Length: 498
Image 1 (tube, rainbow, N blue to C red):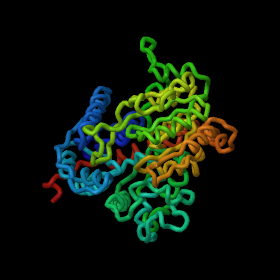
Image 2 (cartoon, rainbow, N blue to C red):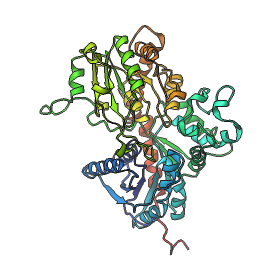
Image 3 (cartoon, rainbow, N blue to C red):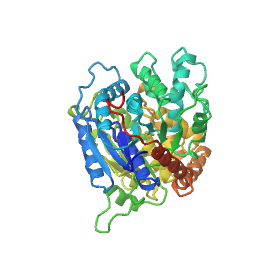
Image 4 (cartoon, rainbow, N blue to C red):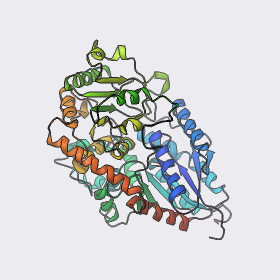
């Protein structure tokens, strides 16, 4: 390089918290522990809903106050596509409409660019990076399994000529056990849907990136990551190098203790009074909520199980704040427990159960010694938090890639007990099935529960060892930092590009 100027990592995340914060935290790790000097420029798209916009602005304010060299560039607003037929298609098209503004922002930085780091839905922007002569990296905020499947999807698109649920047997995804069609991610369920077409396209574009940054660890997902590296996902082509630098989590102090002058959160105070590993924790992510019939099944299961429980129960989205939003961002409201819960339930479970109707500090709860199991929607950030603390899971997938995550947790990692979900009934779970699963998860004498608890404890050590000095993720971070340093380039302008 002809200049000693500090190179920029230019980030283009999707606006959802799980996407945005996972990417930001990962690139902060490059800043703090990669061994090379960079600064971050976060390209901020205006989300398509007011509630998502407020969340993004809150994240920006927190990062601006972090003291790190993070700069913010707000991209001009664009008109959302009005004719999108599905969530994933809408997100990908909406992001792609920002391409000219992304190009102008990167070209106008006036410094070397180490990478344009792209959300999984922004992969077609590799063309912008190529035009500017700068490296592009896709950030995989979900699993290595989803990455392997997405890379392999164009191959499956040619090999499998029927809908996946019409396949006789399982679907072959390199690096994974044979995959039941019912465990395929939601966006690829219907081949006639534009969502499916977009996912095939994204798989093709991942192959054109300079590299892929993954929030996972070699020891967590050895099968899928080896399949990608060995060229089994896209026969005849070498995939971009994958840098598994995870688990990347914003855990703060990593425990539940706060400043002594601060009272603990009510959920934590309740857990403080419970025996070790005695509480099953139910929480379903930032967009997880249930209709009244499903709530009734959950209450029956918890009451009959006899186990202590902490249940984060949210109400349906308000019509004016995201219900039916084109990007799928259905933000639950605070639950009205008198309306949702059957009469007498709270009295009958008093002392051994807490139903919490608002946002709850999930990371702190999972780190509390009283928690012994986690019934979760299976979003990857929640999974990593659970594994970090060695808490076994019962995955209850609701949307996106969570059915694939559930399969991997049970059949490949072995850190979860299975929960039968009726996908044709909106992922409905019967009370008897949830009761059986809770008993198994919490030590009801089942072999599957015992194995899940053992495996979860093993993965706790795996996660922590990976990010320590000398661990696999720490080594991948050093390789990534060096690759970013070596690849940094000044963006071409229209004049010098001719």
